Length: 67
Length: 162
Image (cartoon, rainbow over all chains, first blue to last red; front, side, top):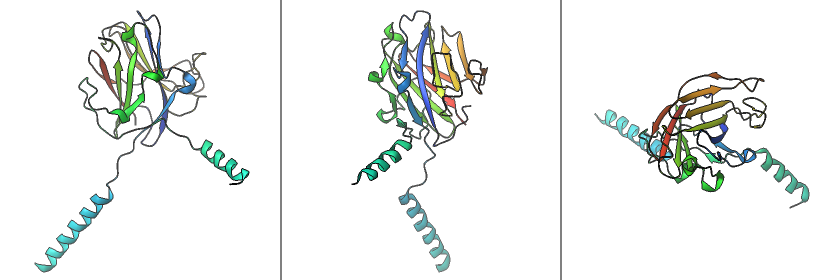
């Protein structure tokens, strides 16, 4: 567990070492330039989705009233 | 615009922390390929990565994405067979999750304050993750294991982050 949530940021660095490695790989190449990743948040429903949902609810109410 | 206005704009801009990659919310199918990632998920490209030797130990591209539970890491390696976990390379992923260089792992020559380390490879003999907390930045305790799905030229990892 990393203890972070959507919207949080972290810096992340990759490195390869070990037997058989003559020159190490680094990403980012410079530690001072290590990149920051911001965790995506759960997408909220779009405006169009909310509009469609509202219209469907209205249609349902109208059908009940006319029944 | 007056000088003080420019200065104020610069100060505000400098105060706003900017991510190099704002993650995409997606669930990656763990099938050993990178097909779930796209160009918008690129964290490090070839120009950002210092090439290692042999070429198979080097990354070509590194992708990141996450959903509500997992952080997904796509590692595209150079040469053939670079991603095979049975090769001798040890792959290390350092994460500074509190964005504080004063806490976390510090070997004396790495100063990023990395709070978590995922380490695997070495012919399949190393498969660990560590959490480094507090002021003692040279010790850590194993916390959990990542799920690894490997292919010959690419690796995809998922990591629980909550």
